[in-house]
Length: 139
Ligand code: CMP
Image (cartoon, rainbow, N blue to C red; front, side):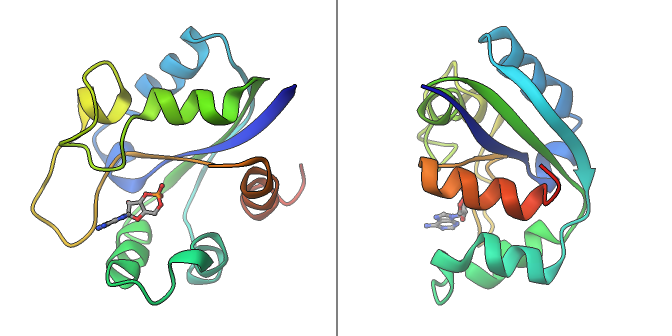
């Protein structure tokens, strides 16, 4: 079915000037951009977005990292875009992510407490609906 996913170009990706490259890959794959907005995340938004990771050792470093600069929030649409974008993104750990993927081509391990892995993509229809509601309350 045609579905929508939430993609984030995290602060490391925005700082490194990779926003356009991520949008290019989404569009080159044939997905449609529905909404794109550069936003400064807040503690409240991140607490809701990352609720499932609360209590994990990387949670606070993750929130601090996500507060460190603006994030490019994107809603992309297409047949199978939820698993499709996860596949474009590659494995969570950029060292293990396959070449050809966003994280595999553009990411690396910086020796920090959190994986600075450039992008986020929703992992299910339920999380996509929830995350789109959080980042784009008007959509
Ligand atoms: P994301 O898809 O945004 O969801 C949770 C984030 O936490 C993940 O991307 C990484 O940035 C980070 N993360 C997940 N697992 C680990 C881990 N084991 N160690 C450090 N950071 C992690």
